Length: 196
Image (cartoon, rainbow, N blue to C red; front, side, top):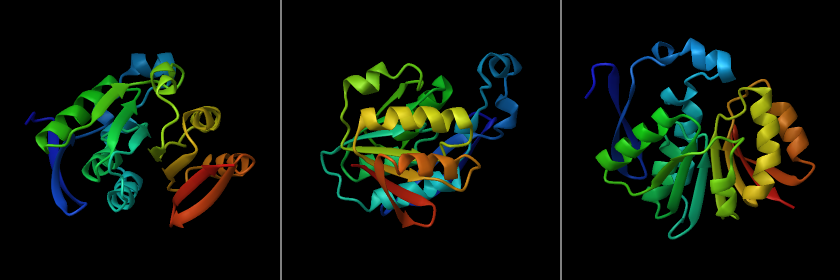
């Protein structure tokens, strides 16, 4: 294991998974990348919302279901879906996140696909749409993300599970989403959106 990485163990779907992640997301901040696209390494954290979504997904019957995760980061919900039998594509806009997700899946003997797919270049995921289930955890940390997600989700599938810890743009996102989607609180800060 690289000395700049830490290992974490997570209990999920009756299994103990060992994940490697960067020791410090702050050390990954690249001023040039930030200046270009306000890129921050959100992917490098094991966020509580991702853990909560993974626990719910791990309890679903997903044998053979095609599942897409947006903004996967470390991809715990994708790993849970794959353990539940789904055919999973985990996506993120950071190549480092995709590489680490692939490595963590392999280290735990979990089969899934992980690809770099920025939301402003969604062709690979749109070509495979509709997805029977779309997952996302803690995606609404910037207004531009909330706006783009509202445009993208209806094109991807009609059933979405979102974990949202109360980011500033979440309220407006869900108000606007309710115009086209049935929005149901499944658990505290976990929502299911079904396209009308």
